[in-house]
View 1 (cartoon, rainbow, N blue to C red):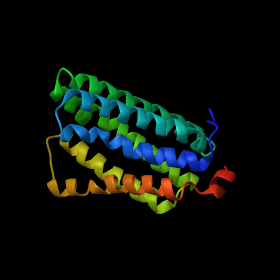
View 2: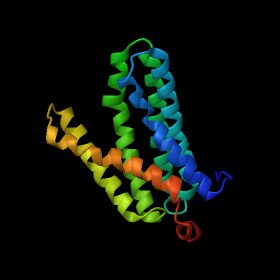
View 3: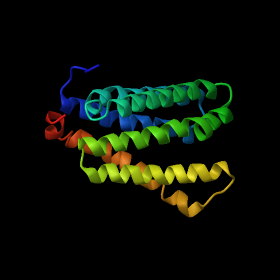
Length: 185
């Protein structure tokens, strides 16, 4: 499944797609149906694209985890696209898809993503650890909400995952992957 592009270009494309995935936030700026649908579609396709481009790099380090990652991100991306179409008829149900369903493939996929980055050493380990910590906070916060519990102070720490993803995107676009890790795969 190796896509024939240079590793530097791959890193830049992935960085761009990480930023494009934040298009889901368009619904916070407008309730216009077509822009939200388009943003959700682009976001969902970006999430799937990241997984497709990362799979060949992750696979040599852990084939099973790489397949799980690809599957989780594909489910997440498809849910994002579906949420965009649902928004056309029921904005509230779009929110339910994101808050109750899509969040779980995101969380599980993020854990696997940062685990694979950690073991592969494709990026500096501090970025992987930061991502795992941010994902853990999101998992705890989301899990507590399932039981009707909310700790606003915990929600402030959700900035960890957001800042991590933006930092990772910029890192990939500027620095790319560690070439020695790729050669050692």
